[in-house]
Image 1 (spheres, helix red, strand yellow):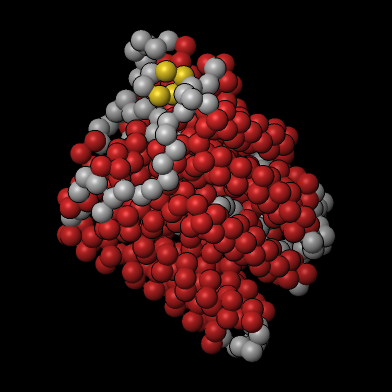
Image 2 (cartoon, rainbow, N blue to C red):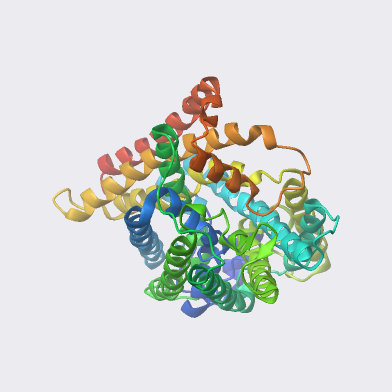
Length: 507
C-alpha cells in the first residue's frame, strides 16, 4: 500500500509519523497549507496558457458546439474533482490519508494498479506538461524577440534554453507548499493575460484592421470529423489536472470541506478566463483563430494592436508558464526526493540538499533538452493527454468513488458515474487517434532543433481546413492499426477497472 498515516495529526509531523513517511511525502508534500493556498495551486495547474487555444477549438465546433463542450468540460471536471476529494477525505477520516494518486490506486484498486498504471501515466502527463510549458515559454520569448528585433537571427532552441535556466532556479523550491506565494502571483497573471487576450480580440474584431469574420467550416467531411474530435480533445485536456491528491496533500488537517473551497476559487477564475478568451477570440477571428490566440494579433508582419500590448501579454504568459511548469514538476520532485533523500536527516542538511540540487537540476536539463530538440512536442503531448489527462481526470475519479462509497444502482449518481466513465473512455480513444493522425500529417515538418514559430503547426492545420486540402489521405492505415492495438486495450483496461468497481462488494 502507498504512504498512509493518521489523517488528524499530520499537520505537526511527530517523530513517530516521520518514521512512517518516506522523504518524498515528508519534504515535498508537506501538509501545512490552507484552502486558500489550495485554490492557488489548483488555479495554476488548470488555468494555464493552453486556454489561449480555446478559440482554435471553437473554430472546428462552431458557436453552439464550442460553448456546449466548454460548459460540459467545466461541470464534469468540477464534479469529478469533488468526487476525488470526497474519497480522499473519507480515507483521511478513517485515519489513512493518501498523499499521492498512486497511493489511492494502491489502496483502492490494489498495489499493481498504482505501480504499473496510475503512477506511470501520472508521471508521463506531468513531465510532459513540464516539457510543453518549457517549449511554449521559449516560443513566447521568441515572439517578444522578433517583436523588438524583426530581423533577429536567434533560434527557438536558444529561447527554450533561457526558459530552462529560469526553471533551474524555480525547481529548487523545497516543497509544494513553498510555491503558495508564486501560485498567488500566477493566479493574478492568468487573469492579466486572459484580460489582455480578451481586450485585444475585442479591439481587433471591432476595428477595420481585423480579418473578415467567417464562422463557416469549409472542409471535406473526413477532415471536419477529425477536426471536431481534435477540438473536443483540446477542450477536455485544457481542463486537465492530474495532481488533485498531491494538491490536497498540502492542506493541513482537518481536510474536510477544504478542497471544495479551493475548487470554488479555481473555477471562479476558470469561468472568468476560459469563457471570455474563447468567446472573444472566436468572435474576432472566426475560423482564422490560431493555435494560440496571441498569434492572431500579428497579421502579415503587421501588428493589429500596439507593440507594447503584445509585449506585456507575452511577458504575463511567460511568467505564468514558469509557475505552471514548477507545479507539474512536483510529482517528479517527490519521486526524486523519495529515491535520493534520507527522511532521518533534516530537509536542509547537506546529506539531502546536495542530492536534491543535483537530481532536480538534471530533471530540468532533460526536460529543456527534449523541448529544444522536439519543437513539435505539442503534437506528442496531445497523445500523452489522451492517454493521461482523460483517465486521471474523468474516468478514475468515478471509479474510485464507486469502489469507496458503492452507490446503489437505483441512485442517479450511479448511472451518471457510469456514463462519465464510458463516454470519456470512448473520447480518449477517439482523441488519441486524432492526435496520432495529426502527427502523421505534420511529420514532414518535423526537424530536430527546428526554428518553429508560435502556432506554426496549428496554422498549417487551419490552412488545410480552409482550403479543403486532402492531406489527411497521407494518414497511414498501418500507423492507425498499430495505435489502435495499443489504445483500445488501454481504455478497455479502464473499463475493466470500472466493471470491477461495479461488482466489488463493500468489506
